[in-house]
Length: 187
Image 1: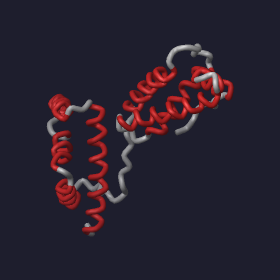
Image 2: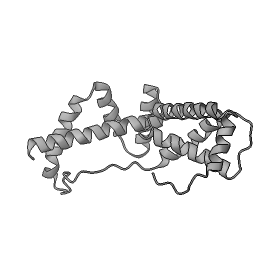
Image 3: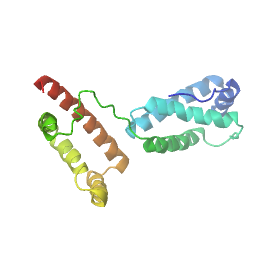
Image 4: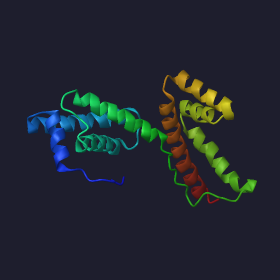
């Protein structure tokens, strides 16, 4: 990720002092908070947990740079609040999926046949739970699709964001499986 600004050492020193007056203990708290943030992002199934934790620290440092944070308060709670904002921003970012040059862009029906056959094979390799999830996720259209996805998430007992993440991972593994199958089949 590109950093659009430089962190001033004074802001970093202020942050460490905010964490604890003893610099060694402040360093330990810094590491503990960073590891906890990574775990939080991992739990939320973010693929870039370490990067997001670093962004949280950058944002907090920016506040110290702007003298917008006063001493006092619970540093861990503040970091968690900023982490929640970063997580929500991350959800709004479009997910980039790299398409392989091997995918046929010809719209003739027969050109998709090898991919379809391989998709069926790859779907069979998934667990029945993953099969139901990926197939159910793409059923219906428009509002019915939204309602179906909401009920799917509720039936599994997970939030919609986690449902989206799980489906994305399944879809990515299916894509890789299909491309491998097509290459091996010589289509």
